[in-house]
Image 1 (cartoon, one colour):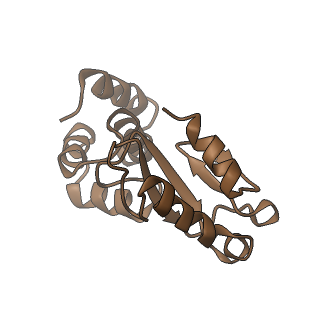
Image 2 (image 1 turned 30 degrees about the vertical axis):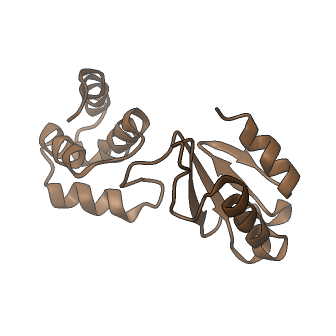
Length: 154
């Protein structure tokens, strides 16, 4: 389930720590970066590689919201709809994404280009509404700016 390069990278990370549980988060990041999400089989493979119980791996992977547990589009949009972002128009942006891209929350566009996840808080209340596209942060969003931003992701 893990590629040779992922196993090599996780082994390099493992050398830095005495307790293999300490390299669990970076190992999950390696798998997510490579596959775009963390499959149950990948969690099992990490557990075997680190000699950590599968339940521990699953507990950590499902606790943190930054880990993805299902296949996603090529680019992940995480749009904040917490209070400040909603007041500043985030709900209108969600509707625009539905209309323009056929993209519902927790859905993926028909062409597999984008997936949308509604985020509880992105911590950018002063520049709301805000979103992440993959790891890129965007703020002060409008319908026009979000369209222009998304056009830059192929």
